[in-house]
Image 1 (cartoon, rainbow, N blue to C red):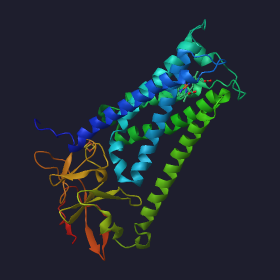
Image 2 (image 1 turned 180 degrees about the vertical axis):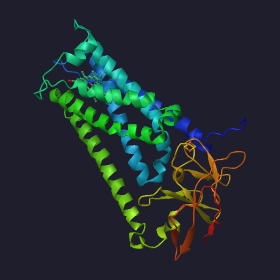
Image 3 (image 1 turned 90 degrees about the horizontal axis):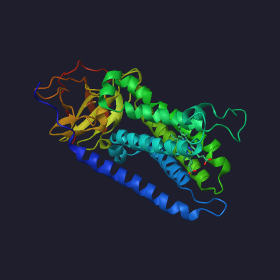
Length: 349
Ligand code: HEM
Ligand code: FES
């Protein structure tokens, strides 16, 4: 087919965000490399390798913290959504920074090993039974492998090839990678740290990541509970107040044992479709209405509101749902219509 989907309309912001992240990373690294030597004491004379290793290591750790915070932050507040769409590029940058850190560490610590750096990294230290002197580098190695794997499979080709379910499952490894990096720092740098700064940064990161996930989980559980457990036997479930759906935006309704549904408001009318994009299961509810069509935030596939059909010449179709409005509340019939079924949009005010 000669006709192609245009990239999503707000893609320009992706370039701006990429540039902003790159500028922040560069500023942090240059700042660290410039400031840190000034804090070295006579007992700890400055050495370029250590400063470089610490600069890249701390930068990778902070970036990893930011990446893990973006998901729950976007679930708590829609204003973080643009960051969510840009997370992949940030992940690739983080893997690059972490690799530079590991490279600097191998360059310095293992440079004179007779067996070679990598053999020494894997087998040079076997003090697994003690905290002091534990081979903490292996935790770092696992974290690095996770970051590298996710960066290497971040392209859409892999999303398509592995299927969205496997690809998303793979991304759960990031939590294991993060925990591994926390152990890497706790058993490594923190054991000999002379200032409490690193401990404060690590503790702050752990509390922030865990706290945001707990808060987002609680809000979602409350939202799901509001979706009508009292109405379980009735065909209609309460999706939420009309006012919760902004013009041109979507509201995602999570149903027990069923696909989530996205309800959109456009020109004072409501329509509902499955939340899963027909392309690669992107989260349609986080998209917007552009040119009268629901537009997926991932790659810009579009669907008409009333029948869930992609405008010609495209042929993708989404399941649609029936809606009702009563006393300012949006009610949803959770039974999906066959993909492409026309449903009269519901007028609200
Ligand atoms: C093969 C992989 C890795 C190796 C060999 C490695 C090695 C090291 C070494 C030797 C140190 C110095 C410890 C000390 O000061 O006693 C260190 C510190 C550190 N590493 Fe790694 N690391 C690896 C991966 C990672 C990854 C993937 C991250 C983060 C995403 C990371 C984050 C850090 C941090 C935050 C520090 C402390 C930096 C500071 O003191 O300012 N490391 N690493
Ligand atoms: S456009 Fe690709 S997942 Fe929706």
